[in-house]
Amino acid sequence: MMNILSKTSLAGLFAFISFNALAADPILIGLSITQSPPGSVVQGTQVKDAMEIYRDMINSAGGVLGRPIQFVIEDNQGIPEKGRSAVEKLITKDKVVAITGTHQSSVCLSEIEVAHRYQVPYVNTNCWADSVREKGYPEVFNTSPYNSLVADSMADTIKSMKVKHVVGFAENTDYGIGLAKGLGAALKKKDPGVEFKFETLDRASKDFTPAVLALKSNPPEVVVLTMLPPAAYIALNQLYEQGVAPTSKTIVYDGAGMADYPDFWQNVTEAGKYMLTIGMYHPDMKQTELSKQISAAYKKKTGNDPNRLIFQAVDSLVVVVEAMKQSKSTDPAKMIAALKTGTFDGARGQMKFDTSPGISYQQWIDIPYVNYQLTDVNQSVGKTSLLQGPGMPLNIGKLQRPK
Image (cartoon, one colour):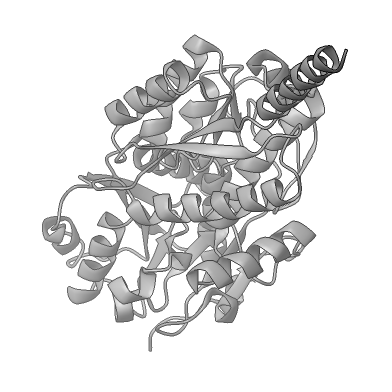
């Protein structure tokens, strides 16, 4: 009788252990980020750091559905083909439940084709190109800023500046060209008296001198950059070195939100002074409890102040995690259904995805943003001159120029 009871107890113990081991199996989430050139390694590092901070917060609180979150990371190098193969591997070999992290539009456009084919949730972290939304794929959700929003805001700012001659430098990507075209269309609608043209520059180039020199004989009042670092840093430095901008006549307007990158000042120094930028974060913006926690943890981990990409990365992971909680499942179809209808409390506010076809499809449209100007070298974002923010109308009278 003792032997029978012992065997029964032992079998029950093994069943209990097996059940709990299965319940504790990690939930795999795929991150496709840039970890090596030619893409933006700085952005990839920030996305990874931020998501690891939030992952650890989730896991320390018990995980999701009783299971820990685990990342499977692939380096897409900022190259569309690499992104496509990365997502293919993450879905078919690693069996991730969702994909997120991507921060360059051309890569997103390649990757979403794979996610759509396999019907796996894909949350866009920082791909601004409107064409990502215009695909209308039900698997793709966007917590990222988007070009139409940025173009409209920049056009309003330029109109308020009462200028007549604007030139753009756009990197040769879906983001860069798309935003430049969007700005042109917005200006034509809002202020048709403005002469606007842009030149497309190769993001892999190390020298934009010919394009810069062409502006010296007839300098515009605004030079708009729709470029990501490192190419954006090169263009900004060469505009300064050639005496094109900044001057009492010409201001540089950054459309990529690069002023809060951790390596910005070490790469541009004097060339960054007086630059006007549209940003998705400023310390004067209203902070959520989550953003306060993330800010403190990011500062402790990296020694750097957080910027908008930190909160964008966290919010991308927030909606993935909450979709599993709200659907009580890691099944892709159930997660997608939860993403379509749910509301999600993120680092930047409460997120809900729009259902209208076109540029706002499955986009969080109420993204907070600011316009501010750098007025001194090595200036932190919190010390910049805030021209516009949530609940704060644009005050172009605060704009400063070199004497």
